[in-house]
Image 1 (tube, helix red, strand yellow):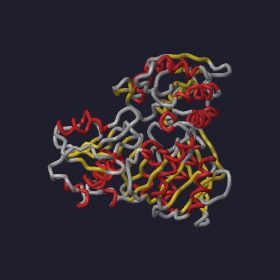
Image 2 (cartoon, one colour):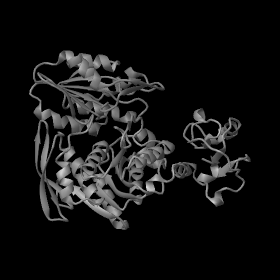
Image 3 (cartoon, helix red, strand yellow):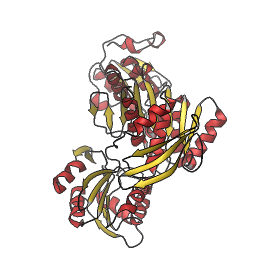
Image 4 (tube, one colour):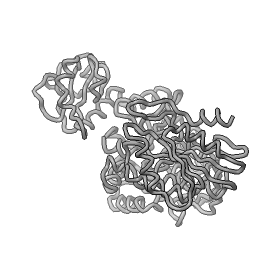
Length: 477
């Protein structure tokens, strides 16, 4: 590919056409022929490295102001231009894909994977981008980010399109939205799941966090919104006042566009009646995914599929064949005692998961969990307080400590504990799991919270292999 292939005619002034490699904003990855995008970040301004990148052989540099350098592409917003150039590099794959996105603090992964299942069951090949992996319809790549960076993201779009995908269901993280990792796209539907404290290390305030989530819906034809969540209700009201987008309210508290009633939880899942206002019909839903929060997740996914073109009958039939989602209230072992794996890594996520599990625990509830390093430290005591309200025994450990001191993180989590919950701590997560298993007696439930589908621990700059699925298989058989 050549440089002029990704530049419009009016963008080529002063730029010589050359063969190009990849497009990147990472100075460490620049090779001869690459296009380097200068991003002004919190700790480093890529503009300061542009001359060095040209000396390394970069074919061009993308900047937001003139630097007096050859081969400089000047633009108002380098992040947005990074997305646009990445899309052009991969021949604009999203023009032929129908996109559905989910945003919110919790429930995104479950929602997009249910959407993928419903569409696939109805003969529509659907790719998926999210925390549980990047499914390009024939191959799944491990995910280290909920929403990949621009060049990788559009590469995955292209691969799934080449593999015959008609749809892509994707998670839209608040960081991705604030960093313009995709721009100029039109989404068939956007889902808002909920909003609770998370990522304030990045956004600073809940208002900034909310506004990042809200920005998705300026690109959506329709929006499925959980109005039981106060931030969701606010979003619904604000989008309603703006107009120009079809709104679908979902609720389990009141009758609205799509509603849930007659909710029946059970140890292996949950059942409910889905009432659809548009068709004036009601359907019984039963899914092997415990927790009332999965009522909203599945109902939102169903509403999005209908909005994207399926009938309610097609959608409900497929929804009732869902098998569950990896790492989301997933049973890893079930004999004398039970081991459940879940991605819950915030106070709200822990509350929803543990409140769903607790009523069915005949023995003791043993919770293994930790808080991530270099992420919103303010939520750590609240996570401890939440777990202490449900667990009989808590084993506090590490969860992607990155460059932070692991014991310090654990101490902050433990500072929030209240009541009579028995507390143990291990900086080594493997030892924590082994200890929890050694404690387990008949009818106990061990809840491994935080890692879910992840198969790594982020320690320093490394991603070390760590699979709780493999560990439990080895420990419990």
